[in-house]
Image (cartoon, rainbow, N blue to C red; front, side, top):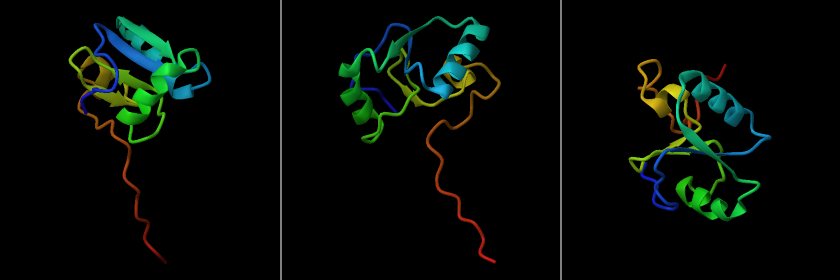
Length: 103
């Protein structure tokens, strides 16, 4: 997905919140990989919420990651963000509902 609702960043930009467990996990993983990134706290910067909602199908999903190439990743792994081989090919789009067999 291309991120057209907020400015394209010059470094990896993680839109998140302090209360968000997946955001904390992603930042810790990026730190371990030595990735250069910035964090925009959506609670401290509510002006980004309309752009996030537009990029995420009307949802304020965090973490949302904007990449310098214009792509956006929703709740991605650190490998997907940095392009490392472990997990880099993982689909980070929201999962489709799973049909369960009836008994």
